[in-house]
Structure formats: C-alpha cells, structure tokens
Length: 420
Image 1 (cartoon, one colour):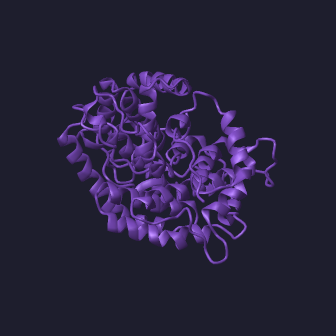
Image 2 (image 1 turned 90 degrees about the horizontal axis):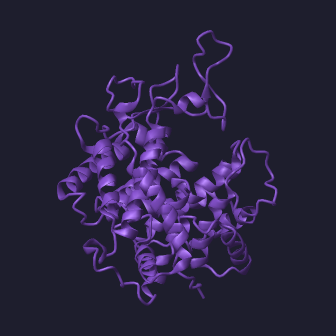
C-alpha cells in the first residue's frame, strides 16, 4: 500500500479533465449515494467518478488494483478499531484521552545516568518513540479508513462503510474512547517538554480520514448524527489548531512543518464550509511556502539540509502539491504560479523528477534510501498542467514499471489533456 503521504496527492489536475470525458456520469443504479460527486478535497471527485464508471464498463487495466484494494479492505474488516485509550503511557495531563507521542529523532544522552535531557539525532528514529503512544495507531487508522472508504466507493459493499464508520466513532466520538480534539502532547521530548507544536505534523492524517468519510456518502452506516458529531469535533480541533500556542508555533515553521500545517488548516476550513479562511491560508502560502521554500533552481534548501534529504524533499513537495489541490477549491492557481525569480512547483518537480530513476545517484549521502516511486503520482499531476516531453518520458517509463495493482492507478485514471 502506498503511504498516506503519497497517495493523498495523486490527482490535483483531473477535475477539468474528467468533466470532458464521456461517460463520467455513468454510475451504478444500485448505489444511491454515488450519483453525486463526493465532497472530497485532497482526492479528486471527478477522477473518482470516472474510475468507478470505468470499472462498471469492465475496464480490465484497473482490475488488478481493485482486486488488491478489496483484499486490503477485507483485512481491514478484521482489525480491532484503535483508540487513544490503547496506549500504556500517559501524557503529562494525566488524561488518557489526550493524544500523546514522543519526538522520533530524540535519544537518551549517553553521558547522563538517567539519559535526560534527550538529545537530537536527525533522521535516526528512536524505536521506542513508536511504542505505547498514539502516532503509530493514528497512522494505522488513517490507512485503514482510506482503504475502506475507497473500497466502498468502488464496490458499494456496505461492510466497508460499516467498518470505516465504526473506526471513526471509536477514535473520535464514543465518550469512553474518543480523542480530545487537540495535539497538546504530541512529540514530547523527555527532559525538555511535554509536547510541542512540531507534533502537529502527525494530525495531517485527519485530512485523509475526512476524505474517506466523504466517500461513504449517504450510507446508513455513517448517520446524520455521526456527521454532526464529527463536524463538531473537527470544529473544536480547528479552533485549537489555529489559536493555540502550539498551533501558532507550527504555523510559523518555515520548512515542511509549515507546509503541512497550511494543508491541514486549509483542508479543515473547507470541511467546515469556511472557504474564505481556506483562501486566506492558501493565498498567503504562495509566497510564504512555495516561493520561500523553493529556490530558483528548483531545490528545496531547508529539506536538502536534512539527513534524509531526498525523502524530505519529496515529503514537502507532496504537501505543496496538496495545497495546490486545495487551492483549486477557492480559485487560486498554484500550478501556474511563478515568482519573479523563477520559483514554482514546476521548478521543484523538475529538480527532483530525474531521481525517479533508481539508477540516478542522489548527490547527498542520506541515512536512509528514499522511496522514489512517490514521484510518479506527482508527475501525473504535473503533466495535467504542463507540456513537458522530457518529464512525460520519465512518467511514461516509470509509471509503466509500477505494479499493475498499485492503488494510485485507481486515482489517476483520467487521460492527459496538456495545457497549450
């Protein structure tokens, strides 16, 4: 399965394309909630409609991906819904309902008897940070819910909707197991703090979860009362995100943390039907994120400084492409924006794209090898917006070598219409 960070950003350019495709509105009459486009923001609604129509027509090229998706959904049906109550460690608040995690790159100081305060080793994950806290469970929740949401959308199998709804209720809504709507205690550092703004990057999974729930449509599994309760939870979290000291700290981060903050805040504003707030975030982001983080050469200096520089360059570019998709909902065109000195999404992708080829040597010695295949879906999005024979050649070659059952194929079904 592709990581949540990768396949949330697969299709940002397909909305106009799919509106031009004959048969887009052809849907299964057995699915009452599937006649209208889903209210998704990071996934593309029109692409989802077109893929389902293609599957209904029996398009064989998509069957391997659908078969794998269904197999993963069947496994998800067997999962016990995770909860913040599952962790054995408690946050400093003492409230088990508070989300809690440790900073992953922090280790005991070997020169101190008790190891405190911890010291930072960038890119070197302390395995104990992944145990008995909430971040791993929350990531698993997001993966399972996106699998179930997509499987329900493409098959109308109510079992998938029922399981996705159950998981959402356990994590967010049921009083005995619900998470409090804040990340006050995320990425704590032993001996230094009980949580910090940087931990907000872990709540980026909320955006995928919201899009997954939108795919349930009017399934009886996700009731009107559930939707109202979830909206109330999101509204409370959004208030915390945009007004708390931790939230404001993360908003002020200059690297990928700031980009992912904008993505979350803008997405949740759209979910809450506050487009003016989303538009303000995304209009500011053109210069505060895109133009600031990308050099005229297309490099991302703040990410290149990391010990896993290719991974972080891809990670931040995924966030920038995600913001570009959200910006389409409020009438802002990130894809064709270029600063006076040449900073743009196009420049950033052109800089990274050659490294989709695993034979091409990345100029830095990273601690861990990056998953270069995550560039393929970004190339797809890019080629919906620009004519570029060189990058199209890379896309054609490396999308062809991607497994036939790769999930991104279900989300990237629309054909190219190149810009003039």
